[in-house]
Image 1 (cartoon, one colour):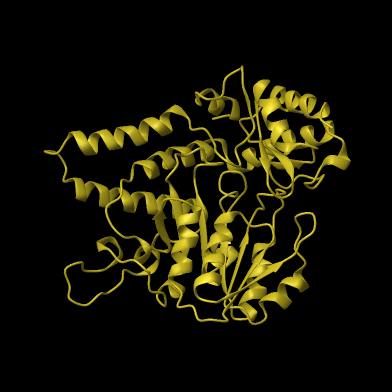
Image 2 (cartoon, one colour):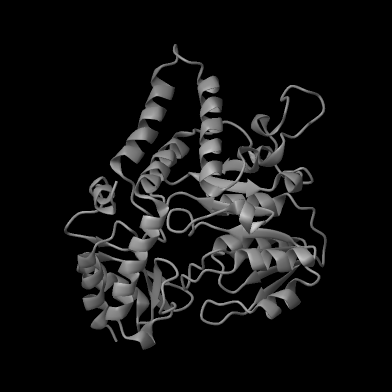
Amino acid sequence: MTPRELRADVPALDEDTAYLNYGAHGPSPKYVVDAAADFLADHEYDPTGTDPYERAFGTYETVRERIADFLGADAEEIALTESTTDGIARIAAAIDWEPGDVVVRTDLEHPAGVLPWRQLEEEVGIEVRVVETEGGRIDRDAFADAVADARLACFSAITWTHGTRLPVRDLVEVANDAGAFTLVDAVQSPGQVPVDLHAWGADAVAGAGHKWLLGPWGAGFLYVDRAVAEEMTPSSVGYRGVETPTAHDIEYAPGAKRFEVGTTTPAAHVGLLEGIDAIESIGLDAVTDRIADLTDRLKAGLDEERLLSPSEYETGLVTVDVAEPEATVERLLDRGIVIRDLPHPDAVRVSVHAVSTEREIDDVVEALSGEP
């Protein structure tokens, strides 16, 4: 498959709209939605066929194995969740916090990587340290100082604010040396850059497939290193997270499965598998190369002084300084161009995928060039 062929399969991508907001939501190909809908219909409309629980549980395992293979992990290290926020929250709730425990995060985190620690700060009395960054970059020494006595460090693999790639493996090693738990927000990675969770070495990684993988909402995943998971007690327990649901004593399922609770439809994750197949049919290297070419074209057409993202390619997220971000987004929408504004930095962000076109890039360059 080529990026152009994949684009033709996405009903939302038409000639009248330049959609450049994949960092928030990647519109799905028709067969992604069809796969999810077909599973749901079969599951609900055929009660005399395969046992619905048997089918759901078999699908959970198929999905788990496929996601693990795509992300460079083992199936037992993957829990199926609803979103990145859901995954981060499950980890935060599984730690026995004490007043004075230290959590370190950067100032580049999405609210998913901010709010759980703020809640614990208010309710338990933990200390949250925020590592200040510059231009989407984190200083290794500043990070090392902050995590020296920390219980947990939370950071993004790709920043949603600048589109920069943080040195995940390096930061994990720094935190490990300090004895801190490492939790990575990876939602901006799968589908646009290669991901190898074992190579990253983090204790836990949360992500979802509704952005660059063009999957449905609700198809989240949580990686937890098996040895680490064995030492964690989930805050909620249900029959999917234990070995024997009817046993008197609770024996949690091995690995990340202990973080799953009860009856949920696999439909969104079934759709996600189609999205993964589509990206892999193009080839992740080809996807990355295409995104790089298009972002280079975008950056070359803009005043370099307005670029808040690196001038050299790192990801498809490109942040641009404008005087009135919200108004700019509305004006571009009137011209059929979809981008988004950011709260920090106060700017707009253009998200370029492999399915984007040169015409879309030229349209957004022209539109932004007229902005103050």
